[in-house]
Image 1 (cartoon, helix red, strand yellow):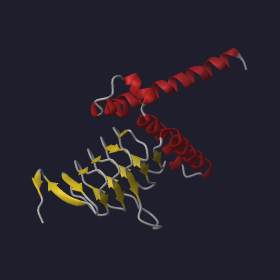
Image 2 (image 1 turned 60 degrees about the vertical axis):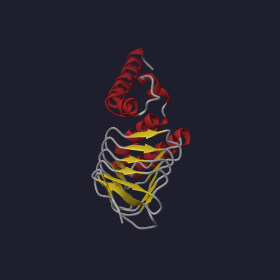
Image 3 (image 1 turned 90 degrees about the vertical axis):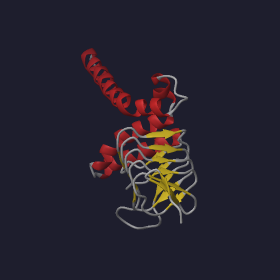
Image 4 (image 1 turned 90 degrees about the horizontal axis):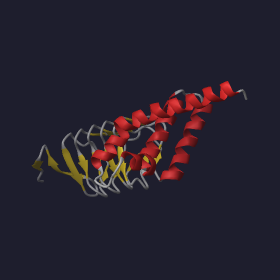
Length: 200
């Protein structure tokens, strides 16, 4: 390979990495730095946080999946499975994810194909955004902006978790949650809404 071609290839790869790092800097890395008190530096987050790695793979796989051509979809699914093996986080490339997602610890997180996640969402380890059976079409939940889902929580089905809501650890949520709500228990029950305690 001629030296000129090699230099152009290396320059293109470095340019792509810089663009990718800029995206992470503005969104995923800053989300981790803001929401994880254990994060000590942006380099630590970039190279050691499974959340950033898994979302990085997703950001590449998602547009390939959207091209709706079997070869690209296969590559997208392969990337998501590779990321799962590396990070313990499974994000289907068909999911739609807004900026600023932070997955704390991450192990065991599953995000289904038709899930939609708003901006500045936080998921803890063991969270499942899944379906309830073999239904077709939209079958996974939609999370609004600034939602927090606690460790081990399961959000199952096609409905919306409203903006600024919190789902408690190990809750099982199977129905719509209005904005500004706190949900706990199995099955999930709203215990606070708009800052006020909800009583039976």
